Figure 1 (cartoon, rainbow over the protein chains, first blue to last red):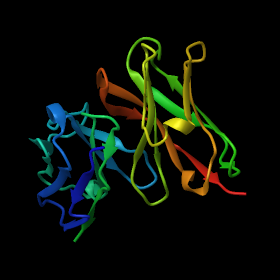
Figure 2 (spheres, each protein chain N blue to C red):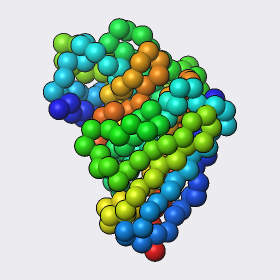
Figure 3 (cartoon, each protein chain N blue to C red):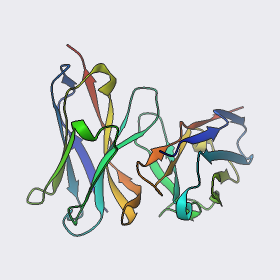
Figure 4 (cartoon, rainbow over the protein chains, first blue to last red):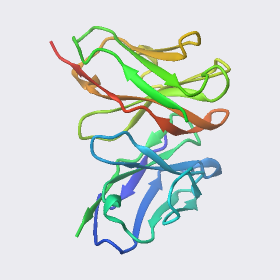
Length: 108
Length: 121
């Protein structure tokens, strides 16, 4: 099973700043089959990115994904107040699908 | 636009079997895609449990396979999860989702709002 480790656990930034979230896999994720999700309190996760870098329908272009192999990054170019929530990465290149433990983005 | 809605008991007893149903609207589950279940213990991360595709192919998380059954009722446009031999560790928010992608490599494209299941006597 591929273990995903997200860092940092908590990221403190201010609105308007740039956020860089990391997701590292214990082994290579085939075909860059990695997705990112955003979860607001009391809500289900929402798909942001799939295939490491493709934005899901309706996702603002301030969200961007990159990476391959074992290292992946979610970048939020200009933080809006509603972006300060929890983010998860997920690999779907091999079974079982697995998620990272999450990064919480908090207002500094 | 597809919508998913979970339903089931909020409280179940240890050793019993949990049955959850996901009702899909806005799309026929027999047409395409895969459909699955994910859970999230309170304050913790996400765990994929099982998926079933329109083709009938089923994919299990090996750590749960011995206790999990997934089924589809196309007449009602629903799919269901059964999880047996419950313990307190199965207490979680359970989400159903539609999966996109190819073959056995899929991401969770659309999610239901989730249903909280507590395992307690």
